[in-house]
Image 1: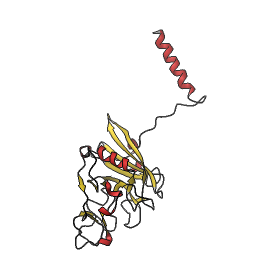
Image 2 (image 1 turned 30 degrees about the vertical axis):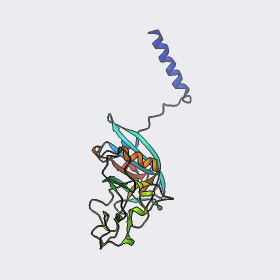
Image 3 (image 1 turned 90 degrees about the vertical axis):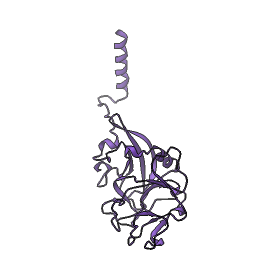
Length: 237
């Protein structure tokens, strides 16, 4: 009993030495997902956080919920649209902004084969794989093979032309389920190119591969895109 008391006193003394005289203990940092109003209802979450709405770079972090708590699984530097972030519900196509909001992740795709262990449905890119971004097309904001007659090539992306960016990618469900014309199309989480994106979120190759092997559709992963504070703060989602 005596040794237990001595050990407890020693622990208290050690703890007090870490703080300035009279200072209160520092509160534990609450993980970002715990401070969010909505995380999508699943037990996996990706947060893509910019320091301000006009920032073209920030951080992507992926989280797992275990034992009633959100735990960080991995993190990587991220790039956003060249003109920063914009509210997803009012975003305009062609503004080089990344839509802020909470979105699902419908499927993955890539020029390369999926990393071993990938569980998300994965489509391989072929020479005639396109993502239609033509507002006048019935295939707006959809993968098409080949390009439909009503979808102009100048208003679309031939996916095979974007290497390394689309070597591996996840579709972000922005404006996807019921597309609104002129709001935006082809928003993905993909591998870094040379600079900021046209509206996607990008990360280094190793991070993208890690995310693909981590994501599990059974756990309903979502991605939340926003800022550290202000009107686009992630905590509002």
